[in-house]
Length: 193
Image 1 (cartoon, helix red, strand yellow):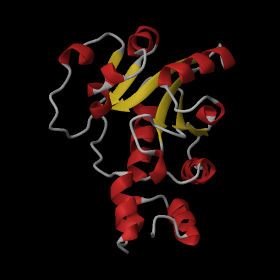
Image 2 (cartoon, rainbow, N blue to C red):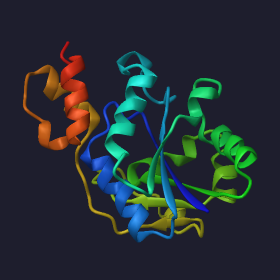
Image 3 (cartoon, rainbow, N blue to C red):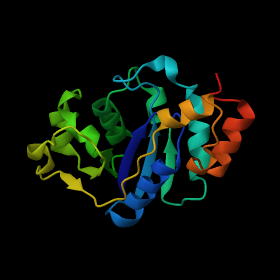
């Protein structure tokens, strides 16, 4: 089975994440998308994250009606901070019959060279890239790598940071969240302080 790993802190998961995940599930040559909830992205501050289990619960709520999209807590069991190369090694050992690929935005592809052992990732895994609006120059060399697949997915400019800030400011951002995620956030008063 060919699995696309879509890593994120999902703090919170929003409709943009689901649009990309569903597009990859339906239009790329992937059998399933695993939305890997990361406990700590080494490039982000950990202090702004909700609890791991709360973020995982939101991903469960958001994906329960999608047969090809599954939540994953695989990184919760690995050393912190999380490094993709370690996660991929662990998944290969745990699921030897699966082929794992990465899903990332074009903005992340531009910084792939900063990732731990990114050459190992590129050598052993396909990377599916969706478009993002960015002022950064594109990495033409990486984009033309045989393991990189640029997918003509919708451009979705919604960020979890925008959602958190909007909730804190008392704005109604309900349309940007899956209904059950909105209810969970509202019920628990997340992001209001």
